[in-house]
Image 1 (cartoon, helix red, strand yellow):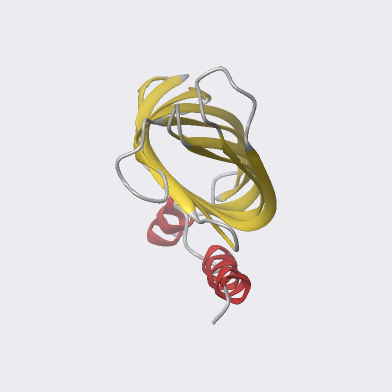
Image 2 (image 1 turned 135 degrees about the vertical axis):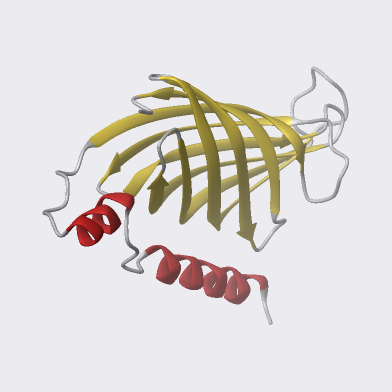
Length: 183
């Protein structure tokens, strides 16, 4: 099976899972109390994280991830950028448009998103040198976030990300900080 076909299959499964009509906490509460669901609220969340472990093979020198997510009524859409790799080795980066689902609790949230991503792979031979070799491709980007709101507009959590593509798939986990209307 080719990498393109595998990436397409993973993206198709992820898209199908995110499109499932899952019950949000508001709907469950409304069904339990036989009242109308609460109106959908929308929020904008900015996430920035430093990787705990990443790359096509562990260990790597590290990396970072960041994103801007718009949430409304259990749905989430946004843009994410991720960078992983070594200082004197290959670096892998992607920019992705994501759509998914978000679940909220009293102080916490979890989300899963998938979408297309533009991948850049650069190989360098020294710290301040230009890339020796550079490749670009498209891939299937995946993202999962778990967070806990410490205050109304600030939270911490863990972000997992991956990009499945024909050149070199990569992923990682990051300690993340979130800003936005979290409560």
